[in-house]
Each structure stands twice: as structure tokens, then as C-alpha cells.
Length: 293
Image (cartoon, rainbow, N blue to C red; front, top):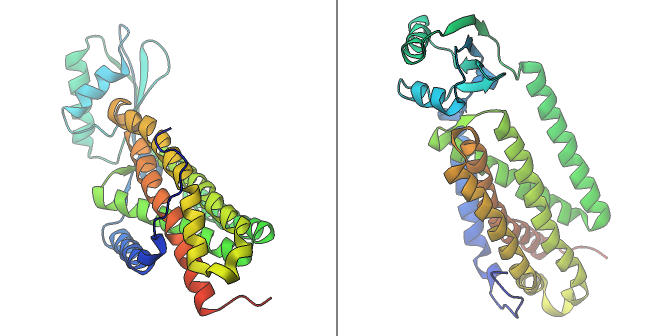
């Protein structure tokens, strides 16, 4: 364990309004980037070209990827289907670029045979995107209902806002860096949502346990005490999750790099939101509109 359980007395809520301004800036900046720059959609979303080739001898996927990276096609999706055959999916390119790729492969591997060359549509079509949006809305509604029943409605709202905060900021970082959005990125976003929710629930559950001291302490002191009591667990969980994801990002190769990068951003933002977003919303809400008995 990196941090042992101790009597932390950090006044997080003293900085809650500054943190809220930082979060508001991050969300507005992310939305602005999404509107102006958009996302770098990969082959799964934009379609492209498909090349099926067969080699005279066994060839590694890494070797093909290195050769394609040399001509600016490092984002190609390469899939081996047997010891000698591969399917290469490219983003929409000119026919001249496709011919260049085939020429480079033929120069590097004698006996290369092109079995198939065609344009393909996106794996994730408009219908699937619409269904995904509906599924996310239903999931958020389910989270809102569960946390309302298990805790309080205000707890549910604060946890859902924290989830939206994490997802939007992660999308903004990908828009800013120009990293490619593929199907594994969707898996990463769903993982971030689950991770962030779990982290927020731990803090909210401790707030619920300490709720009896609300009238004596006040809402900000109660939230501060609850966050400090769960701080060691939050930091230990974040660090032990972040380290293997960092290893995947550094040494996992280009195929999994964007997935690992999304998780790293999500872990950092999710840890921050579990401390400040949920707590800030609750503190401001209860101070401005006290809950009726």
C-alpha cells in the first residue's frame, strides 16, 4: 500500500469553488474543442480501404506495421488470419496511396499476392451510434435511480454529473491531442465511467455513514471528514490502477496505446472528480437549499 490509513485533516472544501471554476473551464474547453476540431475518427467509424494479402512465408504483424509507418500509414489496422495471410484496413485514402502501400509490401516481401482490394464502410454505422447514445442515457438513468434509492437524490445527481465531467474531459483531451477514436476507445470510456462511479460511491457511502453529524458539523465539515477518511483508499486504488495502465501505454504497442491513454486520463480525472465534483455539488446544494425533513 502506498498510503496507510491515518487521520487526514485536509480542508478540501475550502478550495471547492476554485475547483468548480477549473472543472467548468475544462468542460467548456473540451466542448469547444469538440465543436471546432472534432474527433479523429478511426477506420471503425469512418470506413476506408481493405487490402487482403498473402505472403510466401510467415511474416509478423509488427514488421508490416513498421513498413507502413515508414510511409505515414501507422494508423492502419492489421489483422493476421493465418500464418501467411493478413487483412489491412486503411482510413479513406487516394488510390495512389493504396498503390504505394502495395508497392512497398511487394518490394519488402517477394511472392506477395493481393487477394482482395476494396472500399469498406464504417464498422460503427449511424444506427449503432444512435443505439449507443440511447444505451448510455438508459444507463445514466439507472445509476440515478439506484443511487437515489440507496442514498439520496442529491447524491445521485452529484455522482452522475461527475461521470459526465470525466467523459467530456477525456473526449476533450483526445480532441486536443488528435489521437484516433476506435472501438477500444469506447470500451475505455465505459471503463472510466465504471471506475469513476465506484470511486464516487465510496466517498458518498462514507458521507451517508457520517450523516448523523450533519447538524453538529455542517455539510462542508462533514464532507471534508468523509473524504479524508476514504482518501488513503482512493489514492491507493488510483495508483495501483494507474501503474499497469502506464506500462500498457509505454510498452503495449501502438494497437493498445490509445486505449491505455484514455484510461490514464480517466483515472486522473476520475480521482479528482470523486473528491471535488461530487463533494462540491453536495456542499453548495445543501448550503443554498437545505434539505427538508
